[in-house]
Amino acid sequence: MTSGPKAAIAERLDEARQRTLELIEPLDDTQLNRVYSEILSPLAWDLGHIANFEELWLVQTIGGREPLHGDLGRLYDAIENPRRTRGELPILRDAELRAYLADVRERTLEVLEEVEIGPEVEDPLLRDGFVYELLLAHELQHNETMLQLLQMVDASESPRDAGHRSPGQMPVQLDRHFEYPPVRAMPRVPETVRINGGSFEIGATAQGFAYDNERPRHRVELNAFEIDRTPVSNGAYAEFVEDRGAEPPMYWKRDGEGWIRTAMGRREPLDLTEPVVHVSWHEADAFARWAGKRLPTEHEWEAARPHLDGVGSVWEWTSSDFLAYPGFEAYPYREYSEPFFGDTYKVLRGGSWATHPSVMRPSFRNWDLPERRQIFSGIRCARDA
Ligand code: AVJ
Ligand code: FE
Image (cartoon, rainbow, N blue to C red):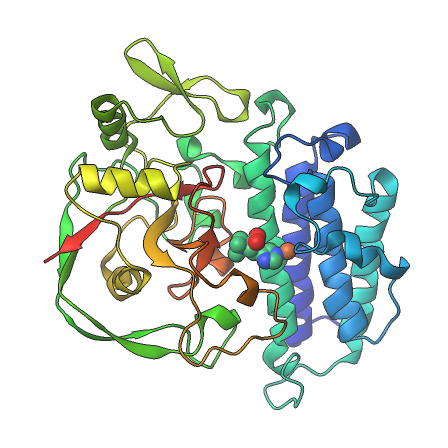
């Protein structure tokens, strides 16, 4: 297998795995097993879950093989096992965990040799390699979850990889990892763009890889609105904090009159021109009101996407609840999106410095609880025109 679509898939699988392993490379088993936060999994759980998801879809479902460790998969079911319980589960650890990742991957490549993945293939899982895209996106999204946890690990024990930059280090080798150029120095008062009212197509087309929650593509009517060209800066957010006596974002610490950033155990001056990150939905909403604006709806965000700068620096909170699009069909499994629909979760759009470019697309919908701040979440404001 040296060329063609299968070789390309194998190469991308390998790239994703290298990224996963680079993230944990400087850490020892104690750190992989440590519970740093109730609201985040220990890294060992993410690693086992990445391998188990791969085994379930690419080895068992596609390859028809038996699992390597019986019903181990139950421990890695994200719905059955809430984050705060994951540190105590009898999950794979240490050498056994590393062996599982490698053994599953070996079988995945074996199965890949056997299957047909062209556009004419009958099985929708294999048509155009859908299930492989799913797997790649899954591993890369979990890399971002791991990076959330790594913000809590002291820098001296943290990964050195370029893909592990914090926003404070963003301008290094951007083109290697980023499709959308992040904003380098943002104006304190952002420029705005006016979007005329009308009918807009929202969501992913039937072609190409997308998650079930991005489909079907459908039309929505929007009133005219204005939206900021750039995300809210640290400087603007600091003014809000001073003015309202609001909580500072996660990883900010007072330093005399100013602020320092403490992620990864560092103490460095906060760059006031960078996008604010690690704010909850409630904080984002409060900031927008303070500024005389509001959060955009996710439809507005998508309609304005061709005109926006700085997408890909921080996830952008929207005012929208995570709801099914009209005509939604769960695929390939019910639990990816459906259990989260309702008014519990808010939608975030765009992507962050920690998001792999292949995961960022205009229709991509991320979602999280409105109180969450450990995600790489920021703010872009809008208002009625
Ligand atoms: C889209 C980030 C909310 O982490 O719960 C990973 C992605 N789904 N494994 C999550 C996901 C299954 C999901 N988010
Ligand atoms: Fe997952």
